[in-house]
Length: 160
Image (cartoon, rainbow, N blue to C red; front, side):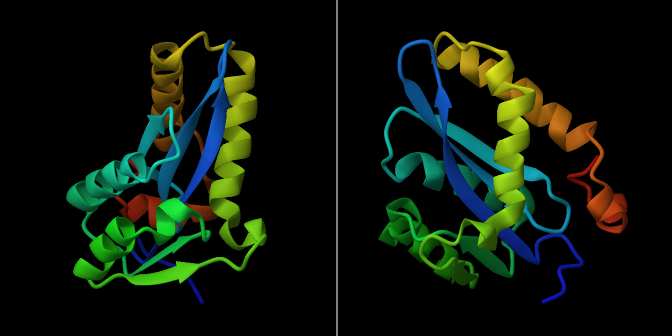
């Protein structure tokens, strides 16, 4: 399938953020066309609420996508998540079990975030991590080059 416009396909995934004592969970929602992060949240639990909060923000700010791709994690198979997407008429796509490459764009985001931000800063706690990640996400969305999506970025208001 050719992805050539914003809001055609979104994806989401969760990763962990190490702290001095413990860790947090980070969810991000990304547009496959522009590669921009549309919303993100940190949580100290793996309950679905922080994912749904990020979804609500992305839908409110950008309108619904045509297709939404995730893995089969419990947060993304939860009734509250799938029903919200169905309410907007979004087609739900899920990766095969253990097939992280099905969502390669967000996996690349995690790699960049961890090597360019998280591993360079020893975040002490949640507030510290939130500030550092927020700064990096702003950099990622507005100043970091995304050569794979030049045509889409020029027409995408999220790209700035």
